[in-house]
Image (cartoon, rainbow, N blue to C red; front, side, top):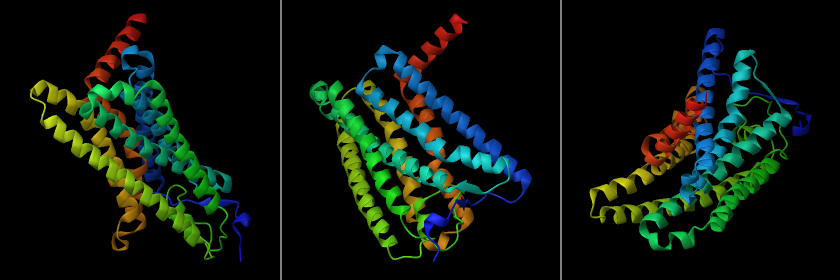
Length: 310
């Protein structure tokens, strides 16, 4: 039996075996990656620079952009590197790092999206208590809890997964290191322990999903009772971007892990994994910048002042 300690590297699933298409994949991913860096970077600098955006909603959005940068940086650069140099390999330690940071960013982002739904609920349904329930200290504590949850969950899953004996080769059916693909290489019943952890994590994620749904049911009920059309528009403009981001993240992630085996194939899995791990971090800044007038005004003001300084 070959133990995992004897494996020095893993083989990732390539998008294509044709060199020209590998270059196309490299340039496509490079464009998406640069768009994510630019979009999230602009949001981070704008919120940090503009004093008017130092509110709970934008504080959480800044944290979300940081996590998006980490999320997409975990998988895309290595995939680009493999396509450019026509290789499939990733080191054992590099694979473990990918698993850790992927779980860390995904868990922390989902926790943060749950907190952001609570922020919108309090802002619209309990506006008189907003300053009390979401003071600066409370916001810092909630954001820290989201990051800590991501760290602990990632540490637990990574340590447990890479303690398993692996004896079914080192080829992974994915363009990055994922726990489900690594479990397929296990030759011991101890993998059931990791499956149990995944079930527990899924139950906690489902509870967060229910919390988000209940929050938005209350939010929409409150918004529809607002008498003025302008008031309803302002409320929707702050809620719809968050709801769109939540929907994109949950729908792509759920389909990636819950799709029926009958439609599972390497090509389908590749496309689904891109929708789950690459598209949301790149699209999130666009969703927020298009729908939030305050953020658009601050971005335009920052760009105008930068242009005048030049």
